[in-house]
Length: 293
Image 1: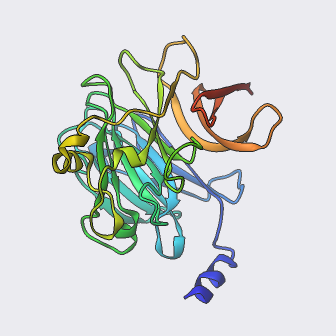
Image 2: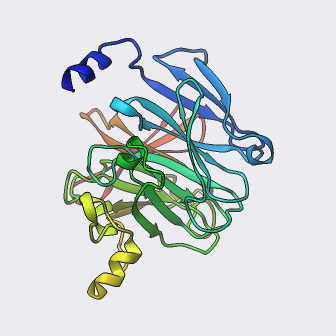
């Protein structure tokens, strides 16, 4: 009930949560809550050989009553495996083989409400060594304990057959229609277009809808609507570091740009001490500010 939800969010268990993990060689995760400078929890996400390749992490409201959970994608060579933990490091669920085949560099994960049903969804993308395939697992199904959560979409971003792709989700481009759907942000892990960031309208990717308002996969949509076979195009592309080569890491956040009001931006970085914040205008043109720390 509403009273139960309000009571829950007034308690001290509702916290700001950050998670950090090892990018290679191990699968250690540390959790920091409510501004703590020391870990409030630490755990190993994958044991044995499954834990030697590092992890990718995302944090979102994937528990009952909107409680925060930590999504961990395996970066070890093998199947596309994703685990869901609570903030104390207790394993809640595991999703095996989320994407088809074997992944030489594992998978990346992000969290966001891509189907606009007020539930955070889990977005999973291929690491380097595979095509830039991306899928999203229904957060509604995850919260409700469905064994095999529905795919909100499955989409292959442009690029080489071994480029892989990093992903983020956020309300970035104000011209996106419908406005209640977020943008998907992608960048290759490797290859000729490394360093290029693309901003997508999720509604262009999800061209038709199934039961309950969930988007069917892009491939299914194209089979049912031959006239819509043209692949989606990004609403904006940019290189946050210009001609500088190298892969970039991505996150969406809010930042004040050039003395104005805070607005949605993509944060991109290659090193810990330099971050480029890029906003997208109504004309879909990028507006970039670089900050060094």
